Amino acid sequence: MALDNRLGCFCPHGDIHIEGTQGGPLSGLTFAAKDLFDIEGHVTGAGNPDWLATHAPAPATASAVRKLLEAGASLQGKTITDELAYSLAGVNMHYGTPVNPACPDRLPGGSSSGSASAVAGGLVDTALGTDTGGSIRVPANNCGLYGIRTTHGQVAKDGLVPLADSFDTVGWFARDARTLARVGEVLLGPRESFPAGRLVIATDCFDLVGADVRAALKPLVDRLIAPSAFLRDRFIAWGIPAERIVHQPNALPEGWAGRSPLPPRDRRPGEPAIFGFFANVMPHKGLHVLLEAALSLKAQGVDGFRVAVHGSDKHAPEAYKARIAALVENLGASISLRGGYAHEELPELLAGVDAVIVPSVWWENDPLIVRQAAAAGRPILHADLGGLAEAGNQSDGMAFAPGDAAALAQRLLAFVRGTEAFIPQISEPALAAIDGQRQLPEKRPA
Image (tube, rainbow, N blue to C red; front, side):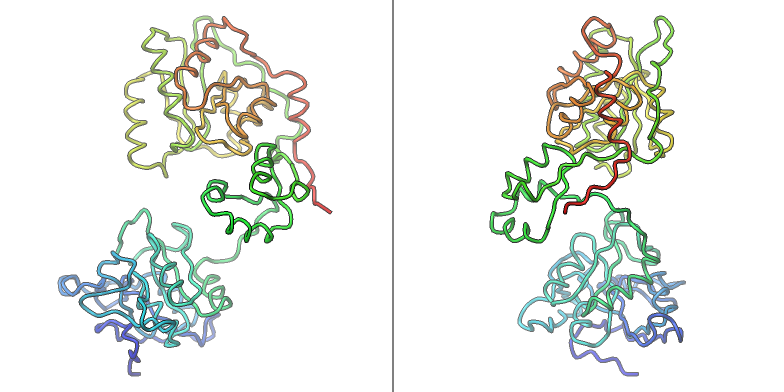
């Protein structure tokens, strides 16, 4: 079958035709693959002729391509990409710029330009692309297509020339939503069932957009559930009528119902207090504030404490990892990094600390760890801002100025020495309030 390249979207070396398996869920569909995906027996060019000339044929087909073939879709060829996928324009100085069928005098967008052009021009039904910083979303927008950047790691990236591996994702284009969904069912697998729960509002994004955008988005939501009074007030400040907002604090997870508060940790005389941090290691979670406070105590000769960090740094920026590593080195034996934990391990981990520290530097809408720590009878030290302050106050927590390591150090010292009115036990009213949040029945607005 001769390759139809009237749009200039296929590579010169991309005339590859492979029939899909008969009878599969995608039988009858045709697709193309960006020239970053390996096809067994063919060289992947990555948009660069020198790369093409210096690399051997692929020993195996990329699993994303293979899955489409096994599902019945037929491969029609490989499409042009910006050189080494490093652009959003869709231009390739070696192979040319694919036509934007939606607007031929405009750029198609990149770097998955050829795949978008082929789909928008009707040469194939769908096409594989990649998205690191917009390389599916931009051409989908420019060419008037449906396009999806999947969650990182959801679609396997084997047999793919990388641009930035920790950001690269596999995605695809379609002219209609039904085709987009059919391909997704193959590449992503069976749909997960998501429990009815919270609507997550990107509050910082709402603050950044103009009033006209907020006005356009507000009518799309009939009701908003605000887990904190703080967030409810934010919604009202954005112009959402108060009567459309339901204030419902988050319920404690399954398995916490009827749980009795833990007794205080059995500390021998002279044994250091253990302060627990329970969160992913990310800048906004404020671990650096806690460690800087601990260093301040150490500099004062205070040695009656240890910091136990429970949380993964898998997604932390490299610069932040380096910052935390330097603080950890200076703290020495005063800190232990325990890594991530499973939800069912939390009660046992809480039993091993004397107090929970929540030093977030962003407002937190309704932090679950505060309510879980309180339900377990563990004292809480928390930053005094937003929904975190609200949850902390309801849980008899002790607040400190957000981002203020010196203020936190004073709180830690008071706990270690027991010289101030730090509340060692959660009060009965607070426990009663928390107990009322255990597995709340869903409240649906009329």
